[in-house]
Each structure stands twice: as C-alpha cells, then as structure tokens.
Image 1 (tube, rainbow, N blue to C red):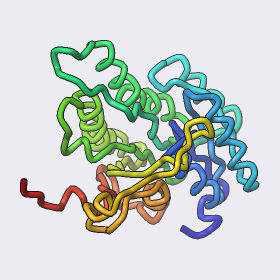
Image 2 (image 1 turned 60 degrees about the vertical axis):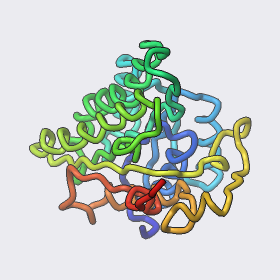
Image 3 (image 1 turned 30 degrees about the horizontal axis):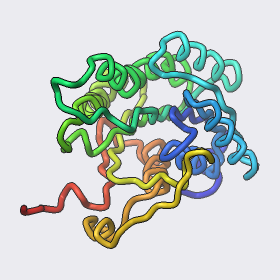
Image 4 (image 1 turned 90 degrees about the vertical axis):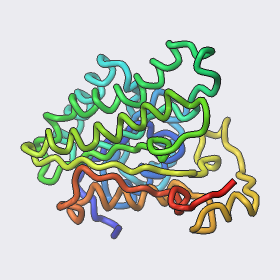
Length: 260
C-alpha cells in the first residue's frame, strides 16, 4: 500500500493497543489515515498511542469495552465529534486466550464473556458506526476472525464458537448493508506471533523451533504485518468489488494434510 493511500480517511480499530491490532494501526497510520485506537486496556492503549505519535502519525486513543453498549455509543459519539465520519471500521477486539477445559467444567459465565467481546462487540460497533460509515464515499467493515472458526483444538468451545459466529456475521452484514454501499469482509489469521507487539510489561521475544516454522508451508510463523497488509487492501477502494468474503492468512497451515 502506497504512503498516503488513506490520506484524509478515518479508520477505527478495536483492540488496537497490542498484537495484530497495533500492527494494523501502524500500517493504516503510515498509509496516511487518521487512526482511532480503542481498547479496554488503557495502559496498553496509551503506549500504542505514543508509538504512533512518535512516528508523527495521526492517532487518538479512546478506551472502550466493546461488549458494553453504553461504552460503544460513547466511542462513536467521540469519533463523530472529532472526525465527523468514518471510512473503515476494523473489528479486531477479542479475548485471545479461550477457556481450555472439559465441557462439564466450564463456567457458563466464561463462555458468555468470550461471546460478549468476540461476537456481541462487533455487532454493537457495526450498529453504532452506521451513521458515520454512511457519510463515507467508500465505507468498509473488516472483521478479524480466526482459523479456529474452521478447525479446533480440544476444549476451546467459546473461542471457536465466537469466531465461527463472526464469520457468519460477516456475510450477513455484507448482504444487509449493501444498500448503504458498505462492504464487509473478514480476515482469518492463523498463528501470528505477537510477543514483540505487546505492552512493555507483557512483551517477550519469541522462541520458535524449526518445527514451528516448517509446519507452515510458507516456512515461518506469521507476524502482525502480514495481517495489516491485507487489511489495508480490503478496506481500500481497490477492493471495491469484494464483499462478504473471508481471507485466510495462516502460512498455509489449514491446507496442509497431516497423517497421525
């Protein structure tokens, strides 16, 4: 994506303080966008904001728990007050460490919390962003799902269910919002290493074995930049004929057959 591709455009990214969200925030900012970062972790959010501002990128940070309707309403009011419109909404916020345990040991409150953030959150953000998106010339919504929507490790019920629901929500919104000229797509990341992209107190250096790398046909573990480059394209006018689709970015893991 060329520098300046998003000049004059406003992009809101949820869960933008760390990991894939931070990688996308930097990429959109470097492409010229006014980036609105939101996250429930204020410490991480302030660190992310400082990182963007240190590169002289246009950015603001607004704390928000996307599962809380009142907070999402306040978030969109702030975006309206500051920018007047919204060109792209990136629904990235999610609980990345799903409950792992036996079905009969799982607390329903844990299940509900994962779905509230990972699925209810994107619904709320899309709903209350609509008036702002309708003002944009080429509006787009991008949902960050997961390859866990299509495959699972044992006992990850809530996370897989939430990401599968978000995949379905993507094509439902694409059809429903077509009359508003709003395109809706999804990216399903596989193994993306986010250690160096965490807040300072949680940051770590990855230690990937040769086996970790070789199990990917691409020969390596993914990085936030891999997702960011695709996000820039899918939210741009160049993707104007793409809607209701999902792009799997996993280094080829989900197409590799494994025999026990």
